[in-house]
Amino acid sequence: MKKFFAITALSLAALSAQAKDIVDTAVAAGNFKTLAAALTAAGLVDTLKGKGPYTVFAPTDAAFAKIPKADLDALLADKNKLTAVLLAHVVPGKVMSTDVKAGKVKTAQGYELTVGTTGGVTVDAAKVTAVDIAADNGVIHVIDTVVIPK
Image 1 (spheres, rainbow, N blue to C red):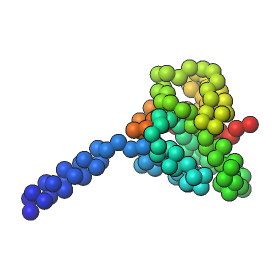
Image 2: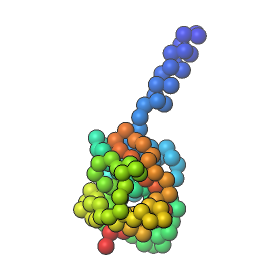
Image 3: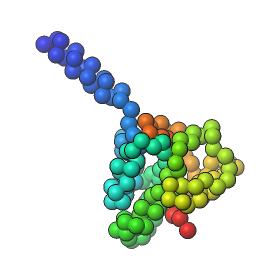
Image 4: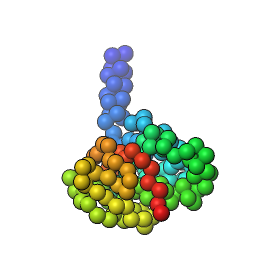
C-alpha cells in the first residue's frame, strides 16, 4: 500500500511540474475567464496551444469589463471581428520585458501595436500590469484594457 501511494505522489508531482502552454497558463491564473471564452469562440485555442513561441498581451476579466456589455456581446458573436481583436494581442516570438523597446510591433494578424516605455510600459492605450508570465510556448504580459484594432 505504501508503494502505491509513493508512486501516486510521484506521478502527481510530475504532472504538476509539467510546463503549460499559453492557454493553460492563462486559465490557471484565474483572471482571464473572458479571454479564455473569447479564444474558444474564435477557434484560437489550438493556435495558442501550438508550438509558438508567442508573446501575448493578455487582457484581464476587468479589462473586458470596461467594454459595454452590448458591445462585448456583439464582439463575441462576430467570429471574424473577434479573431482580429484577439490576434491583435499576439506577437510572434517570445519577447520578455527586458527586450521591450518603444515603437511599433507587428501582431500575428498584421496590426501594428504602439509600445510605449515612458512611465511604465503601454501597448496602444493599455497599461502592462504584470510581465514575463512564462509558458512553454511563449510568454504572457498582462494588460488592463482590450486592444481594439483601428
